[in-house]
Structures are given as C-alpha cells and as structure tokens.
Image 1: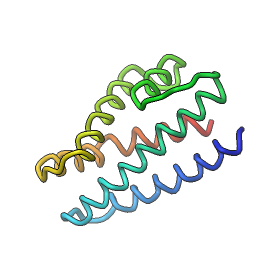
Image 2 (image 1 turned 180 degrees about the vertical axis):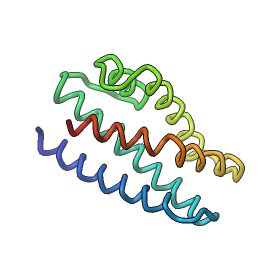
Image 3 (image 1 turned 90 degrees about the vertical axis):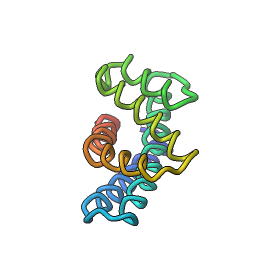
Image 4 (image 1 turned 60 degrees about the horizontal axis):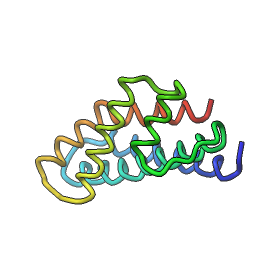
Length: 129
C-alpha cells in the first residue's frame, strides 16, 4: 500500500475517533457544533482517502466527492443504498459549510449520530481491508 494512502488512513482513523468522542457526550450547542466540525473533516478525509485508494487499486482519478462515491459503488465497495446516503451526506456537508442555520445544525447532528458516523466508519473499514 502506498505510503501516502497509509498516512491518510491513519489521519482518517484519528478523525473518526475524534468524532466518536464528540458523539459520546451529552448534546448541547457546543457539543453539536463540535460534532459537526469533526464530521466535516471526517467527510473530507473519507472521500480524499477513497480518492487515493481508487487511484492505487483501480487506476482511476477522481475529482469530486460524489464522483468518488459513485466509483466506489461501481467497484462494488459500497452498496447502492450506501451510495445514496453518501450523496445525501455530501449535500449536507456542502450546505453546512456555506450557510449556518441552527435548525439545520440540529438536523445534521441527528443524521451524524444516527447514520453518517456509522457510514463513514464502514467506509474506513472498506479502505483498510
């Protein structure tokens, strides 16, 4: 495995651990905002690590998160349903970094806690196997 990919995987693992710690705390505004920020960098590390993985394993160059998740599906690394969730996650990540809305922040926190964290953690496992 490429050294750059190994480094990204280690960063990704640390980011996941950081998000997990934030989600394990009792929710308040500060914890919510911290979890969202940690989600943002988990998302970034997830798709960028996947990009390196796809280049190394399949010789494919990827330029966007959505393209990356579609390529993972194409190579049977994630399911159709997971791909749809990753595309939804991408839209949510884009919305939260461009605008701040407290109601959306609350909704996003719940999505992170209920499905996005688990999905990103599964992506990590796919990339290390």
